[in-house]
Image (cartoon, rainbow, N blue to C red; front, side, top):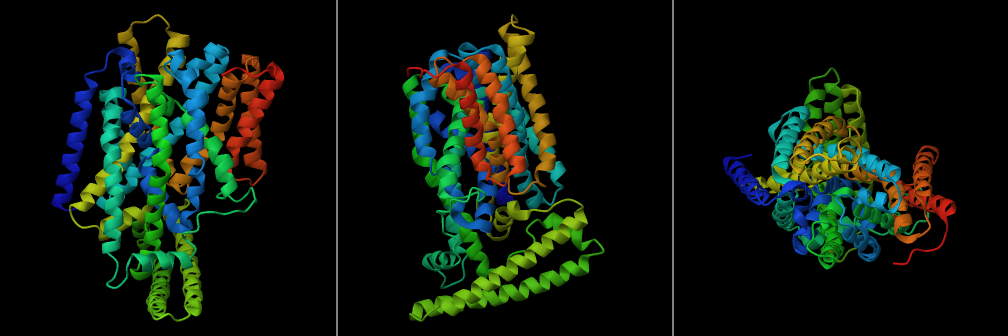
Length: 559
């Protein structure tokens, strides 16, 4: 980055951290640290809820996902508005009126301590892993821009974020999220403008959309009933609905947000706010990935986007093989580039572009095959798997974005990472202290003691997330990975809360046994079948609800 980039980057973070410190002074005790003394407005909470989910993974992983597979990932979010309405009717009133610190604390009021402890434990496991994946995303940016090893960048990111979270508390987290989310919207717009201005002379917005269309990259709806196909309209409407209900309705990182509201009405409004904005935002971010795919029809992309991996191969005995693949890739790209320009000329002249479309599609398949060979070669040299889809967007930024704007966009991605990671660490800390330490180990300590333990818990979970981050880069697309990890747990947790809210005669034993069998069922489905991970949420919720109902009774609880 240039001096103006560093200046903008530094000024932005000085402002954000200063604001966080200012807001953190309003915290009073443990309730202030975890729940902002229940005094925040719905608009701030709504943006914070969105920011918690819209991590750096959203900008890095989602764009890379769309670059490879097109817009089909949007189907995961289509049921989100319906999920928010259901949450406002059935979930939020119970949590808000119970005056709890955590979602799992409510389950002891409704069922028993063992159900509370098991659900809180499962949350800690899956969200601790998720925090590590979130921490890894901005490390990619630093490693690409500065040429540092990912291990070093992860350690730096961990240190900064842990320190920031220890200082802030939920008040600082929420208000900082507001700034960071507004910056994220600005970053999306800037990224789109820069991308279009970087296109070759004579290539316009309509041309880019057209080429993406003939490559079927804009196709966002798949009507297939095949349950092994991850992204279909049905997996989105059913699996995506259950995923959204579970994430926003049972995950402490989300529930904690609307527990900070001034009133029940404001809690509900914060979720409705997300129902209207989340899907359009996700569509725009996916669009950046598709536009990058088309952009690289005219500008030659790297054979492998991860420059650190390329450097490793070039210093190995297999460098000659990689050079040969690069030469082949350049030849194929030149052919596809020429065909793309001919296609646009034919389109403008009103000629039949059929043969040119076929030529571009064939070239694209050949280019993908060469990239697959290169990634396999990198994997052999490294001794571990290589997946550079997460480096597509960062590589574009440092190559094509002008000085000054680059600093802004990098700050946006770091802001997104911070807004998610600080939220995760706060949620992990609250569940650790409230659901385990205070409940089982030291129930009669002072408020000051619990506040100290809360900060220590934040530190421990930050270090744990750092260890997970060291392994995250070997596990594929980050946006898929974070959802896959959650889906293994979320459905079963959702089933327990549905029992609590809807089944008056459901018992703690039924919920506890159902939760165990739900997790076993999801593990069996994941191991023995090729069913999409989106359906794990449905399987877990249905099994838990059915078992809990059978063991506890069937008369509906009045709402």
